[in-house]
Image (cartoon, rainbow, N blue to C red):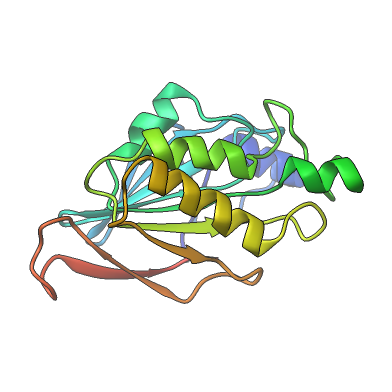
Length: 199
């Protein structure tokens, strides 16, 4: 089975000298075709070895998967803006960190190479979505420094400020998501629709 990843991630995982059958390196900015699906790797700021987000497209429908990022760069927002659906981390709420700070890999890391707060995601949802986006899935919530209700409330308020009542919100479970139906804006039901399951 082919395994795609950045060389930095491959080496950071301890496989620098290994020759894994089926490993296919992908660089930030590169797009790879997997049957009818195209997968584009997008560089993200995080304290890891060459981390990337992914933009997946099939036909006219597209979904972005962006977790483990410390801030939203202009380039990343431009990539996310073009998508019909978005899975993005809403990792921590600063109020939770203030009462029980647990920084680092086990908790929230508010630095520019750590994780996104509920407020960061709110600003994206208020000002960074295109009219094409109809679904936002909040993911990678910290168990210690966030609560699902806080993440949803921040996202709902941001969508309200941006007058985007046409966007549906969902939460990813810690173990992943079920199937996510993605349809291009304006497409007829059943046509141009695809399903993705993300972990």
